[in-house]
Image (cartoon, rainbow, N blue to C red; front, side, top):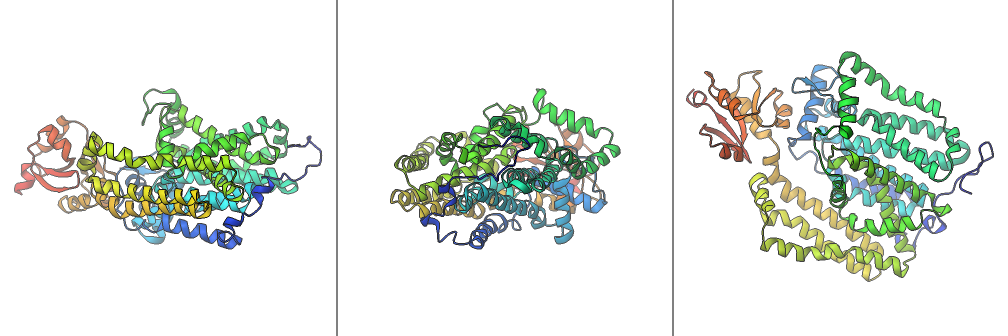
Length: 562
């Protein structure tokens, strides 16, 4: 029986089958001891998440504005109301800004400090995935699942970027892992549940109400599907409410008291509006996250169909309740965010840990007991990668508009854009040959190393070229020398967020050609940053003072003649 009647003695729940808990001979050297496994995971994350965060300028969109908000916290001493460009910034809770601000206090206003919190949270999330997977499936599958998570494209990117979503993924993973520990621990379940409620309070500080509502829905659906709703009575929900409020409520109450419009904007306009309003930021179709997941979970996304089919086949096995929980976790989050009108790729980051465990378990099972059908499914999963060279040849013969945009807006030539993909395909072809030769452990390592090579080439070849197009550091420092103290910088069409971080000046955004014409007609010297393609489209004749990447610094005649 999966559950026990309410009030009856309850035995400890056992997760995973005997096969899963056994250590396969193929992975004995990789996981001979707990220390080796944990050190291996940490080493992989140090290479992928930490090695590059100090050597890249902050990019304009999210990195610049979030780092500037945290920098303002330190300089102003106001750690309650996030401020962006001189105005309250209510789109995100303050938790991630606190982490970045603390890093600034310890390491100065540097790119390393700005990115350090997400790299650390990424490492923590991978370790939590290992610990949760160890309880569910045993150490072998857990180790592989953690390696899968660390070497997915989106998780790698977010761990080295200044955005809030990694904080949510960390607390969701922590909270659900603690709840699973309580569900399966028997007599000492209460302490795990209480700790999980503190984690869900942290998730609410990281992202808002969905930090609590979605994990709660996962737990509720899991218990309802197993006909164990009576188990809710064992979960100390009253204490959970108090603990969650103790973690999250002080900041929400304080900012609402200081800013009367905060609750209406954050809870009604921002959150409910994402579902009910047709006028939202980042509107996307309902199927938006399917290609996002396909690309973001690379290179392991090709193994997702086989892993999900295998998990679905085993969802009702009493010895395998963990698989059903992971399916509900990933599925509910994917459906919820797909239903919202407003969508961004990073919103679905919390589904990566459960999916990584399912893929890790697939490979673990292949190594331990390579049934013909399972082996065939994994080998066929390589097919999309092996067909990529053919698709690339067709693409080169008829270059799409995307290639022109890559060259014009990002400065990337075809060889630069293709070299990381070529390394990935070559490495995956080698991994396919190893699996075909029944060297499963080496094949798994080959996929992981292929991604590491892809990441390294991206950082060495592509990112330096894109830096001058995506970051305004050099332009901001150049303009900072020309402007009088405290004068705002003018940007046409959009605010270049890294300007705020590197100069401590406010940015004036000019929205229309009429406003730009009036601005350049000033009696005093003025300057404005505008993209090169906008400058050409508008047929402007304003003098160009400085150019870098796709940005131009233009001025009026008085500035040039001063």
